Amino acid sequence: MKSQGILLSIVCCLLFVVAFAQERIILLNEGMWQADNGRLTYFENGTVVSNQWFRDVNGYKLGDTPNDIIQVNENLIAIAINWSNIVQFITPDGTAVAATEDIPNNRRLCTDGSYVYVTSYGHECETVNGTVYFDKGFVAKIDISNFKVVATCEVGWEPEGIALYDGRLFIANTGGYAEQEFDHDFETTVSVVNAATMTVEKTIDTGVPNLYGEMSQSGRYLCINSPGDYYEIPACGLVFDCEKALTSNDCFVKFDYPATYNTTTLDGKFLAIGSAFSYITGEYEFSYLTIDPCAMIKTKGQSGLEQTLPGTLRADFMNMDQPYGIYVNPYTGYIYGTDAGSFEGAGYLFQWTPEGQLLGKHKVYINPGHFLAIPPEGYYDGISDAPRLNDKGQMINDNYVYDLSGRKISAEANSSFFIFHSSFPKGIYIKNGKKILNNQ
Image 1 (cartoon, helix red, strand yellow):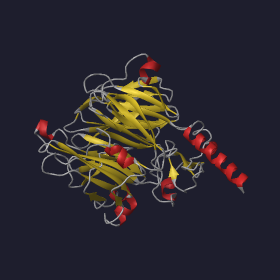
Image 2 (cartoon, helix red, strand yellow):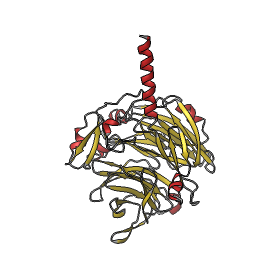
Image 3 (tube, rainbow, N blue to C red):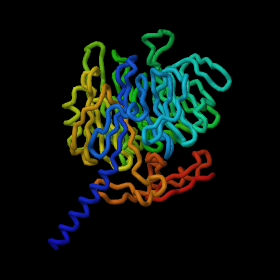
Image 4 (cartoon, rainbow, N blue to C red):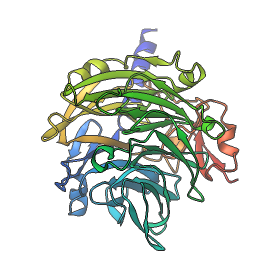
């Protein structure tokens, strides 16, 4: 029995090492706005390999204020570089392959594997038909076969978060320039756009102003933040049901805490760090939340929200000068967070186990805020050889469906709808470690 226990311990340790060895994170450091000093940090197996990874690989700077990064497919990553007005495309080894220009003040990204969609605060965009002017903000559709903008769609003022569900784009509008431009108020709407035709199908008024910041997705559910108006209207958050939104405007639940920085866990919940700022007091107030979106929607907000985070995360974030990001590796469950400090000097990257045990603190660059986990070796060409592991190193057979970037597509285990619905993007999905083809 003793020898069996020792053997089991050795096996568990080996599995832990294997899971940990898959940790490869790209961290976007925004740098200082208008200083043209955005950088990429490359983090692998518990070590910061480089804090200027893009420059190391390509020999030139990344650009001014990068603020989103996504995996497009096996060979392509997209980065929204806000003040440089470009979407930069790189390979997983960091090599720059193309840059789509003239998307002014671009913000957030999503993809269906063939196209990249990006929100823009700007009022004009160069398209295949010439310059198109908008009264408000817009979404641009980039064809990754040639990296050209092939369509645009006007949405609300200063659109921010964007997500794809069932062939529709869901865009959180902010109206964030209301105080500067004076010709419009804060937005309270989510625009629903047909991704194929790039036309607005409906606009849902949440009654909550300024839907700004990180927007995480768990299948049909979105976590949306509102910082309020920074004066009289308090910050809060929303759980938004994309499935319900297709047929009803009664598709969201409001909760009385901000969710400024949020992420999706392997079991489909949201972890959120809320930062509420008031110009009246000049102070920040923080909240720390675990949100079960399915429970929140089903109970209309009566359950599904806890003011806690796994392990020591809450205490560790409370000890930071300025929490600036939170992320769960969708392949392994390891948790990451960042501290921006003074916003003017070096920040820090923190790493925790899936249970929330702090593993390390690493010095990075200015304003580190956005993350992307690189898929484990063999993820695309041999899914069964690189299974998703839980924190004990065991393969996860959870009956959920995931896309090739590791994002959970179904929020319930009964996932046939997401595979066979005719309007859902064609392509390859993963269920219980096996590839499933949606060719409808």
